[in-house]
Amino acid sequence: MIERMPDAEIPVTWESIIAHAKKKVGHGFNRQMLSQKEWNGRKLIAEAFSEAKEVQRQTQNNTTLKYKTAPRAVLQKRIGDLEAKNLALQEELEKVRAQQIDRLDVFLNTPCDLRKLLGDFYKAKS
Image 1: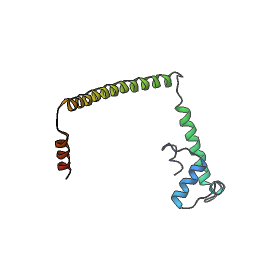
Image 2 (image 1 turned 30 degrees about the vertical axis):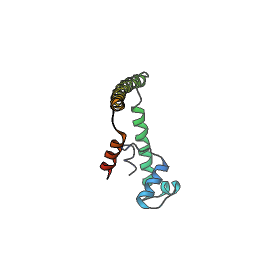
Image 3 (image 1 turned 90 degrees about the vertical axis):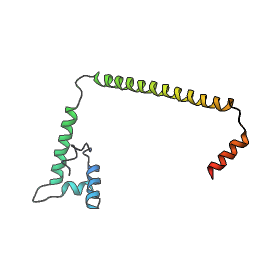
Image 4 (image 1 turned 135 degrees about the horizontal axis):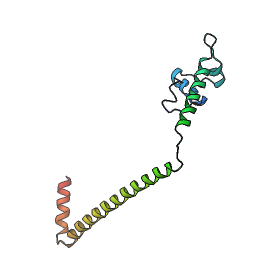
């Protein structure tokens, strides 16, 4: 279980190991008990924790960016995409507003009997 934590991008900490052990076994063991438990003279949990922590450190060191400006370029691209999406949504909103104003204008400028509209409404409702 502990060896798979770095691959699943779960932080390798004693708190997360205690939480996973509690989910799996149903009892919340403390850090000292987990790190000192031995099987055939080997502290398997402590060894697995050390190995997983080392793997996590190596993957964090390997994923550091080579160029300091790379995150800025990624963020600028993301900002550009979001601005384009925002403009498209604003145009769509203006289009819908114009359609609704046209409908309202047609409704307000069309002479009709209010009693007939209410009667039709209540007939359709029942």
